[in-house]
Image (tube, rainbow, N blue to C red; front, side, top):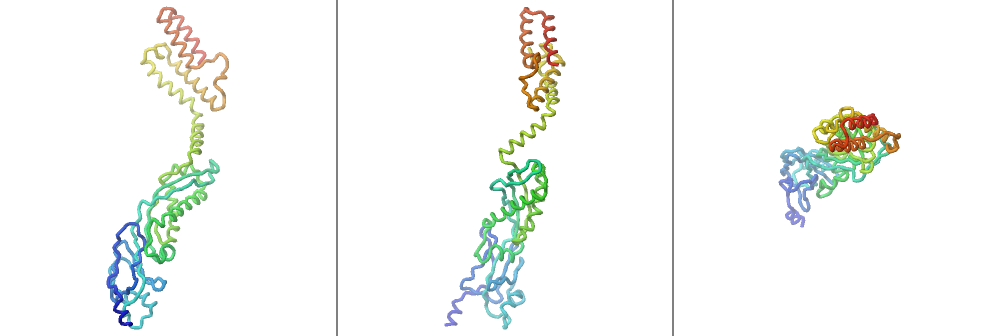
Length: 338
């Protein structure tokens, strides 16, 4: 009966893994009802590692190459088995292959906004996302902590763990650095390097090496972004008067080219300066919470002056008003702008 059982057994003389799909990190060679022939050939291809496990104990690990399995090439397994016949008979052991190829274009991001304390804005919620790449380096650790005795373990099963690891590291990084959000968002490359350094030891705990990490975007939720935009606008308002005067100075030559424009009305640079002053005062009043409509009596807006001058100029063209009368009225109106 023992002889018949021996004959029925299948003996493996070639051990190898030809990856037929992408994304598999660990694969166990099917050993059901099979034993490995003494002197069998083991082929480990580039971008692979192989590991022998005997009764739950990790034994030998093989780098890329071709091996003939003997007591010389399996020193740890030979010791565990305690063969006293120089390993002449077939043996049974679990054999695992691991892919060490770089896993590219892996995406990470915050599924929900994370809450942090910011120096400038106080408590804020932010989002961030990017890509990263990694590869397997330590099959022992990966087997013990991740893949175990599974027939195969895929990259997709690890995605959530790695993404959350990166997000947790990013949250800690914000808290430890004390750098304001606005500075982090403006220097994404530098922030990415800091995240990379933070995440490297976390990946190493799983037997993985982090190859690269890119931060593609850091942003506030939409409602907070609007508040930030308003704050930026208020910071800019202090220089708005000079900006308005500059804009008016550039607009005067364009108006001079058009019939009925400021040049046709005889309005020179003085009107441009006065217009800029009025607009600047209006913007300054708005920044201080003053209602421009409540301006002192006797003052008029630039729009009102231009509209009045256009009407008066029309009366000059019809002969109803003389040029001298027009010039006097124009001078009076421009004084109200200064």
